[in-house]
Length: 92
Image (cartoon, rainbow, N blue to C red):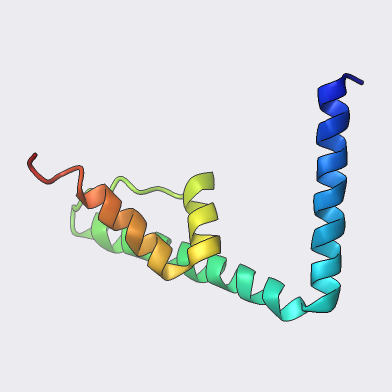
């Protein structure tokens, strides 16, 4: 193993240990974290479906970045993604 792989391995182990201790102390935090992610992704999916039924191109797909934003910020984060996407279409 190279030096970088060892550092990466120790970092992953430390992160997992921290995550496990957080889950044991407060499991409701983890539930809220995944709840925000599920709510954000379902809003993203249904809003894209709503817009595609009306031939509106939104160009916001479900990818790792949108999953991360919706998990951390929830539905307001998804609305922020759509607001940032809206600025592309405004004249400069």
